[in-house]
Length: 307
Image 1 (cartoon, rainbow, N blue to C red):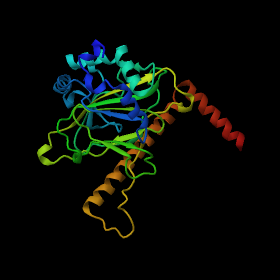
Image 2: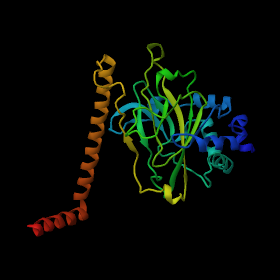
Image 3: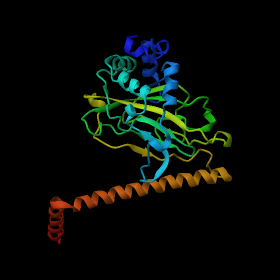
Image 4: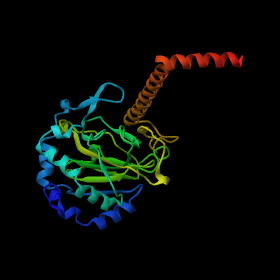
């Protein structure tokens, strides 16, 4: 391995790029690979030690209110470890390494970490199954890969927060794969129109209430993309979780069942409110300025013409 990477990558784990690529290409429900001990152990601990306080990040959710998730995109301001990470992942050696593992050449690093950076989620948080926005928000780049490194010592899978990979969340009640966010575990997966992913609800026992789910998310792009994988530009597309298979005729509801139903309904209502607000904003934008006045006059003419 070349010298810029030796300082922070675990050489033993990433040396077999051919083997990692074979696993990536064969994985289901879409291409991905899980790499244990991805970073040098000491370097991974430095990132955890320098991880920003929850209050330091952006805590405002999609609904415009403070929530249980905090993100920091400006990783270079977090400490020496994060500055070293930032320098390493934009190096040609690292981009070529990820390209060798995934078979995607000419990868581009995002210097703005838009949507990425450090992610921290507290108890009660979940991430609905979704596909990601498919173009860089400010560049004409195709989003191709997510690389996530988890920083959670001794995480119990029963606590939730597990990365879930879905075949089709519109049809399936359970994910095709579930990956616990264990310390120094890396997951690299493609971002396409079918790479549905999220994580299940974090439910911590009282004695672990101080814990949170921490990770570093890195996104990679290319200037071009195979025509068969290219779609029109869109934002992140969320799908609410389906009812569990246990909800069948004759099933007697338990307190846990009622709580799950209420949670599903609350998420649905919240999403509907967001969509309504977005629609209202678009309508109001159409009515503003000179273009809005012209559109208004055209609508009036059209209605009168129809009469």
